[in-house]
Image 1 (spheres, rainbow, N blue to C red):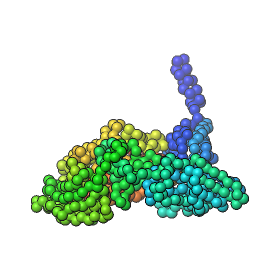
Image 2: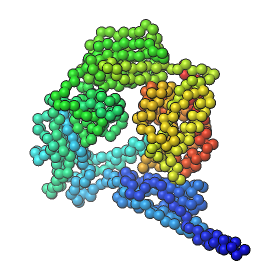
Image 3: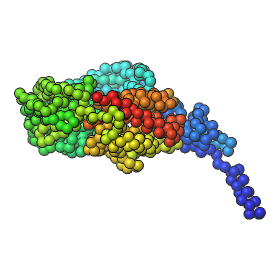
Length: 594
């Protein structure tokens, strides 16, 4: 009896000594560097039933204890203060982050050039005929100029500059209007390079003079040099796949395989500028290529002949060149055509040879667009399902696929469907309860895979469990397996500055024209099945969507950072609804395939 009394006393004491509510701030982490935002979100969890305030603002707590708040942020070092209270007591937590300074007005009674505002702020090497553009922010109402080295310079004019919209925030918002706030004190100017300047690692200097004649000079500018076009410079792709971009750090333009030779015509920080033709340029990271010895020359390739050959499911084009050259393939929006663009190529072609047994390719036409660019226009007798392009010695072989034969009574039987659970080894987005997106993606993908297998489909997972799988390896794995379709399963999060309390829900993404029908069908099923906001159907320049061999889409069924949607994603029944909607969308797409 005495032993029981002691145990009861200990239990009562433990109840009285129950700790104050727990606070777990998941995002942003301590010391995070946030962009130049005025408002942004934070997320985390507290002991369920607690009352929470963030920087003095009352914040809603979901029944799971999860919270998501959209709060004002101040530039510079910023402290997020959280306070939670329940019957057991009060708990507080502080989180310090750094918020970037946005464009702001400088006081006219000062005289300064704002540190960090100079553009460009990296090493440049430019060819003759190119313009060097220079801009910076300083005291409004002054006279500005710049020079390369300490030679005579060029004038700059003051421009009222509107705040640049953040494309990610615009994409995650229902508003089509960007912030049009105008900030004075931005100066811009340019000079045209002749190639005779003799610049070799010359520093850019900035000058600002006020009305009284007081001057300030900034010598922290970039190093600039002339690019010598007399000596051609070539590089060879050294990565398994090199990403060519529209501009440094901007969107994907094309992917080039190991060994492809590229002509360099400039340097932009960590990128080489590439000359593809007389009018076409692209950019590649220095780390993706290796420079070839000086004096190594590759003449403009010659296009000799194009042939077609019947394949089991479609046709193969053989584009015979004197050497491999950079190319792009553009499937037509009509679903029955495509354009092939060959760079640094001249046509010397009188013949297109058609295989009489090939009924897929209807017609091929070519034209010399400029002195170094050839375009091939190909029309088809059936819808294009996908294509694969690769070099076989000096011939560009493009395998064009017609749709598979679909059994209208058993649409999935024998079909090979690749399923990609997004992320891993990285976690992807993390929910307020620290739910990992990669785990939810895998759980939904398994449910979808089981449904498809039950209907006779063959299923490939691009990863299983926490297996590591590189983003560029995934579509390659699906293509190597011979997939007929690819669906990549993700769940969403917002960029800093966007408001996920107003913009969340399901969304669907495609890139290739022949993938749009699949994306639309799955999106219609989300609309019917998921009790969430419709975040939209997107054209998405994403690696998984850019797969060429088959229709491929990426889905984001919910926002894992929103407490209610995180709770739904943790519910097996809701995961089943997502999988069933994707399954139904694929089935609808296949039924409409002719």
